[in-house]
Image 1 (cartoon, rainbow, N blue to C red):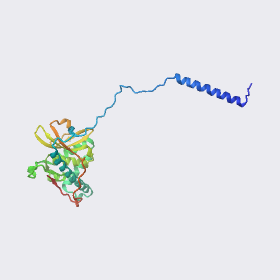
Image 2: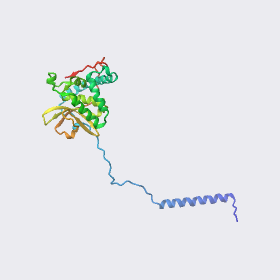
Image 3: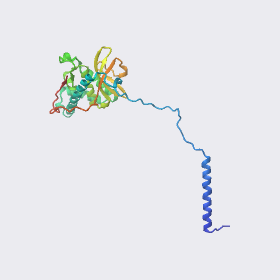
Image 4: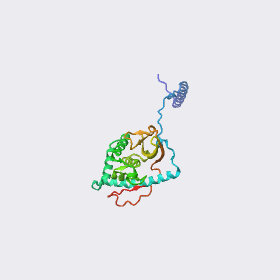
Amino acid sequence: MSMRLPWPAWLLLAAVFSVIMAAAWHSSARAAPVRVALAPVDAALEVIPAPAPAPFGLTQPALAAAPAQVMTTKWQAMQAVIAIESRAIAACRETPALCSPAAARFTAILDAARAETGRARIGAINRAINLAIRPQRDSAQFGATDIWQSPLMTFANGAGDCEDYAIAKYAALREAGVSADDLKLVIVHDARLGEDHAVTAARSDGEWLILDNRKMLLLADSQMPDLKPLIALGEEAPHPQLIRDAGLATQFMATAIG
């Protein structure tokens, strides 16, 4: 038997049914505990060490203010020459017939290094430049002391002292794609030999590797306790204005900075 209700009665029943269902849902919601998945408080966290900001932990020059300023001025002048030589190297690649023998040898080292990555690239440049230059003191080569040669001048002469090796390696690493933030020319005091020395420092995987003309093996700064840093030179300072370089795209002219 079917029961027929007038439509207002159906509306009333529907409203009552909705109230009953809502009450039942709220009751079950209060009864059911809320479960939140939390990571264990003692879970091991991966700690990534911050990259060393400067080689040998140097925070400020260990040189007195006046010598440090002289060194910085010489380095800024050398940066201008390196920038000019970079253009000469680019022209050498574009037109090999115009490439000087020194630029050709330097470019060959760069090309071989670019085939490597990371630490291997740094090591390749360290070994190649150590083998390309014979050690010779400024007094024997120039009859003067503390003469800084540009990379292509060093390669043209085939000889140089520690800072000439270091400058050439710095420029080669920049040409090979190493960031300026990860490179320093470092003047150190060798406590074992009792003399000042120049090296290049290149940061790789958070540590500073030392490129030394007296070693083929790359060592981290922490592995060379005899070297006491005096000043680290990079590209933080504004670049000096380039000197006139007309014609250097086709002809290399070396400049020594004393």
